[in-house]
Length: 478
Image 1: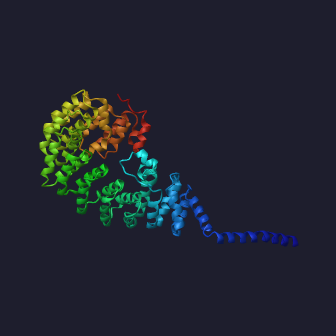
Image 2: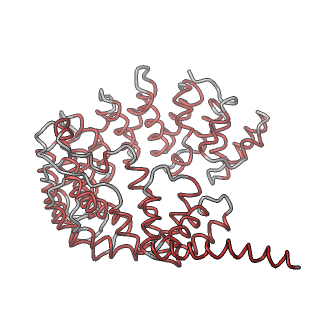
Image 3: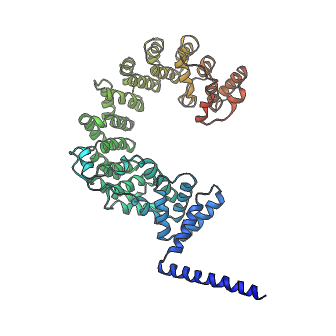
């Protein structure tokens, strides 16, 4: 008995000084217990067990101290944080809410001192200027996409902090805030975004214009028109793209002027004119598009052949038929597609000639075949079906049939698709036909599968990336 008492006293003699030492360390270094507790919970976020991760997220979110937020943000901005750990940290940040918006946007280095843009970039880097965040190798993975995940998870509550950060001293933070507002689109952010159009940093102005382009609001028309004259090509390009969906007639004249003055905005500006020309009273925009079809500038022609499809003006028929023989493949293919949208029987002969010409690019033939299906009628269907079943090139037929759901949307003929399957089909094409929501196509695909002893593969619902596993069934391309 005495030995037991002595042993107990010895244990107390050892434990008591250690306990006193632990209390002294905790008192002299405040927060050490919290740090160890946070580190423990953070390690639990990397668990493969969903229940363990959820429990750790719940405890961290309930804590909501600056220490927790800093630890989560630093971990989240570390590109080495991947897998379950990254998912758990993201969930914890979302659970904490708006308090994490400013830390997560300001996390990371600033761009440092800036120098005039006319200096060579290598010299500016030697003088100490750091690459902006959007030019760094890990920018998309670690800065933009991941932050957007958190902010979208927080939802509209993140808008207030983001709007306040539009006035931050660091240009990279202002650009990030404007960039992330693109997803939320709060109505009270317009004034702050418009003020950024006068910012010295081109990336900030581009992010602001990009977000303003999402608003279908008359307040953004004038700012976007003024941005067409911005010295930064990205800003003007995005402004031209954003003016079309607004359908405001005030944008027609400035867009035409921008097309004549700046090559960088031609494509987007012409496509925006196509949208504006759909509105009543936009005859100026329609006339400009018809003029661009005959432009010697290849870029203008390439955009105009797509834009005229918006207005469906029969005056474009002859210029589009002439452009089927354009030297640039993109222009000729776009002209064929627009002829299909116009739906005029007078284009059938020209489209049939494209299919029967040997030296025409494959892409142009694919679009001509689709255009004939869109026009419809006995003559067009007969020409397309004859090409597919008799003299058609194998590669053209296969490529036309592989994007079946898209072509069904455009009104492609069922008989032509079935003929393409029988001539140049494989399991991928048959599978697309089977899941195209068309009973006739599904029956034809099932019949093809039975004939080729692969009905099980044809009828399985597959993700797009899984088609690569079926290479052994695919016919070799010529």
